[in-house]
Image (cartoon, rainbow, N blue to C red; front, side, top):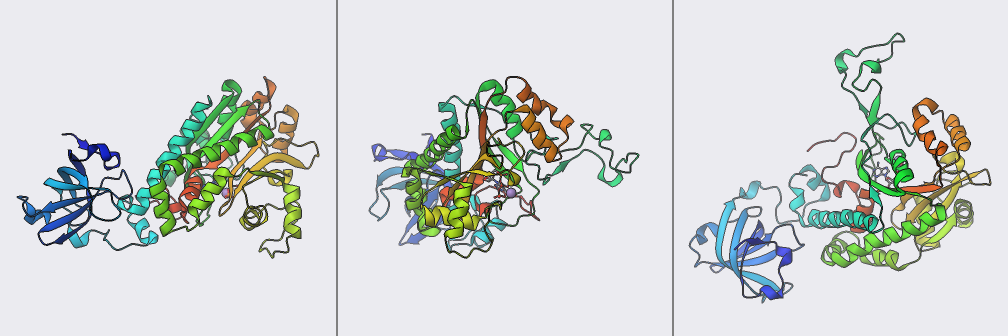
Amino acid sequence: MASLRISTINKKLLNQTLTLNGWVRTRRGSKGISFIQLYDGSNQDGIQAVADQELENYAEISKLTTGASVSIRGRLVESPAKGQAFEIQAEEVKIIGTSSGEQYPLQKKGHTLEFLREIAHLRPRTNTLGAVFRIRNTLSWAIHSFFQERNFLYVQTPIITANDAEGAGEMFHVTALELESLPRNAQGKVDYEKDFFGTDVSLTVSGQLGAEVFALAFTDVYTFGPTFRAENSNTSRHLAEFWMIEPEMAFTDLQQMLVLTEEFLKYVIGVCLERHEEELLFLQKMYEPDLLETLKHIHQTQFETLSYTEAIDILQKSGESFEYPVKWGVDLQSEHERFLTEKHLKKPINLIDYPTEIKAFYMKQNTDGKTVAAMDVLFPRLGEIVGGSQREDALEALSDRMKQHGLQQEKYDWYLDLRRFGSVPHSGFGLGFERLVQFVTGMKNIRDVIPFPRVPGNAKF
Ligand code: ATP
Ligand code: MN
């Protein structure tokens, strides 16, 4: 019989003979019986197989250690043991690959997350990373599903680019030049005309500008791809390589986007609540005592919209002593964001209309002349989870803003064309995928929710 995945086992299969492939999580022996906890990555706990000494290779079975790979054939029966519905009465245990006992770095005892990062090639087999990556997989599916159900076009924007969409200059250069002998131009600068693309290029920090091009042809689009930032931020929320979801919607203003963003966040969280109770209960027990409560709260609560100006007022009157002082015009820090969402309103917040000075060049100028139609969605525990805006769709206003930001107009002429030919109000946001995974799993460090984290000083694996 073909092998089955453990997660698909159900009552209907009782008393049938099944074949299961997987790895030994643990094995303990007692009076001529071995209890093997078998895991194939498809569910949180795996399943117990019971092998007794009647089996012809029992001598080998009784020496199985954590990490060995096996194929087990046996009958599915109700389990007498507590905490598990079924177990397998093994009729055959084929040993496929042994695991050299003591040397296997993942022993039964719990390991710290820091240690697991050093063995990132083996940590996917742990129950923590198992839970995280099954949830990550579901979130990624749910994101596509949400947008596809609403007729959004999935567009893949380039990874190598000559644009700095955020204008922050924190980019990784890409070159095919010989670094040991760089060609120089008359001014003594590196001569990028001799480089592969004839100009200097980098890894993208955002797919937004390309997404705007497509939104003005397909109305509703989204990107979901890797982005790169050479920011030297050694924090638990920053990676040098991370994935970003960027929807972009034509004929959509800020208010309409707020509605969609709330629906989107509730949808993807709702799917996880529905499908991953086991994983969430495990992560709650291990890492974040309020995990399920917070997720359910967000799923059920109507988000509150607040302007930046109102938020500053609330913060100033709060009587809290913040590390970073608050006054109109400053960028909000995560301590401010968390105060607003965790203590003051106790719900998710759409914070809108930020001062022009602290936001990117492409955001729509409001009529007050001081603020732009930006929005950040603030979540408890995290602060900002989503950042977005209505885009400046007026040619002259955009061109002025680009001049103020010192952007070379020639380089962005194609972007200005979108405002010359059939310009429409349009809006979009960016959501860091790993920040979302972090929020849903309750993991404290972003390095534990991506397969192989790229951070300052480390690109191992
Ligand atoms: P932060 O202030 O946290 O550095 P940002 O303002 O630089 O974020 P944006 O430029 O608005 O972030 O990027 C959009 C989204 O991408 C953010 O809301 C966040 O979810 C995510 N993000 C940004 N930088 C990183 C990073 N280095 N690692 C992981 N996710 C990131
Ligand atoms: Mn940043």
